[in-house]
Length: 385
Figure 1 (tube, rainbow, N blue to C red):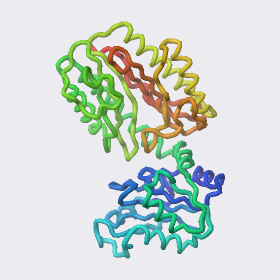
Figure 2 (figure 1 turned 30 degrees about the horizontal axis):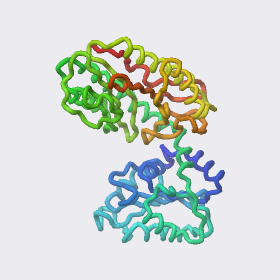
Figure 3 (figure 1 turned 180 degrees about the vertical axis):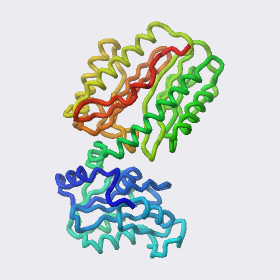
Figure 4 (figure 1 turned 180 degrees about the horizontal axis):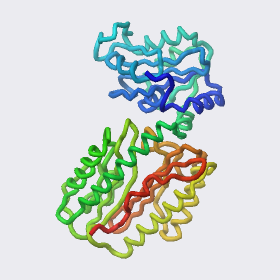
């Protein structure tokens, strides 16, 4: 057990709660419960087997975590929260000699009673919760005012703690190496299974703890696809298009960026499209500054790319990266989230031509003193010979 949270930006959480007048947040979303507690549980879901954290604005009311009994000992070992309780799930007793509640809501009721939760403003994940869980939870909170803090938690998570930056950077470094092996495997006669395998093996060789995704788009069946989730067995021929969107995972945090290729040769038009997409993406990334909004970033980039490509199809050109591959700020026309130091963002541009979805994506860290371009070492030559 650590004495302080490694992942949770507690200062921002308290700032959000103060601004919204929230006395208590109750969070059971899979990502939010991991983020709040440092405990990377397995098997949690919104509708079944909840892992749930109770965090109070008043420091005299200590936070609590409720987990399934089978996960109690590991939760106690990994989380910074001292009060960890379990309900009977998968096992009725373990190596920890302690009381197990018959179900989650009995445990929750005890926590709320012990901390005298009456007449408070309580923040939950609102419409993101399953209807049955939400109804039962609201029944326990009778007399309290319940508000939805989903967007507030997204704002908290947007600025990364030092530990989060370490994990995201390491996942990106591993994925750069996987892209290297992927490129080396591209040749006439190879299959998209071969390319997928080359990236997969390299990720684990470089120390990945898991695979976030490896989506290979390969002529003719998936070259148009944004998220082709598994290979098709296509055998590469001269002139074929290949795209890969991939990310390794390190200590629970993912990477996410894209490169596209042609085998041996392609047309000048394809080369021009690729150059324009990359030029605008890099210029936009290196121009990121604290204080810019997601909408401003989108509008500036859209204006630049439209000088080269009419009817650019993107609804957004970037997103934050954290525990989830897509977090705030989402860079679309209407987004007013303000970029802050400590935000990790992925900028991505794509365009369709002759059945191919050109797609490029890079990762940047916004700091007080400038931009760290994490994916700069990843090659971007369009034609692989």
